[in-house]
Length: 116
Length: 113
Image (cartoon, rainbow over all chains, first blue to last red; front, side, top):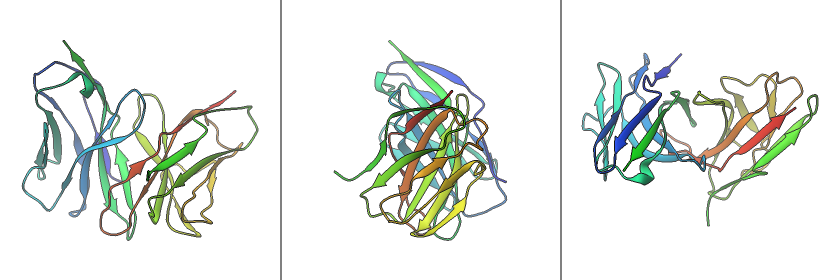
C-alpha cells in the first residue's frame, strides 16, 4: 500500500521569508500524481499545487513551487514571500489511478505558522 | 455558483443511532468521494463512486454505507457499527479519466455521545 509521510508536524516562518515543507512517499507504481493541499481554519481543502510523476520539471504556481525527486520519493513544497494568509495545515497527497477514479492518500499534515 | 455542498455543518447524535451526511455537487462530476479526518491525521478514504449506482470501499469502509442513485448526490450513512464515529467528514468530487482534480466540500463535523 502507498504511504505518505510528513515528518514536520509544525513549522514557523516569518512574513516575507521562505519556508520548505517536506514530504516523502512510498509506492511501487511508476504512474502517479502528487499534490499539496492547504486547509485553513475554515477546514476547506484547497489545492495548492500538483506534480505529474512523468514530468521531470518541477511544478510552480506563483509563490509555491515543489522539489520533486522521483528516485528519492521526495516531494517538498517551497513557499516564497510568505504571507499571513498562508497560515494553515498543509497536506501532501499521493494519487493512484484506479481506472476512472483518482484515490488520494494523505500525509498527516504540517501546521504552518506565519509570524510578523 | 458551481460547487459541493455538505449539510449540516455540525451534527450531533446519540450512540447507537445511524446518521446520514449529505453531499451534493453541481459540477457535473462523475466521481465522488468520502473522507474522514481525525485530529493529527490526514484524510482517509471511506468510499468512492465512479458512476451512478456503483461504489467501492476505500481504506476505512467498516461501519459506513453509501448510495449513489443520482449523479449529483452521494450520501454517507454512519451506522451504529462504526466504533469511533466522531470525526470531521469531507466529501469530494472529480471528473473521471487519468487524472482530474478533486474538489472538496466544506465538511460536516459529526459528534456522537
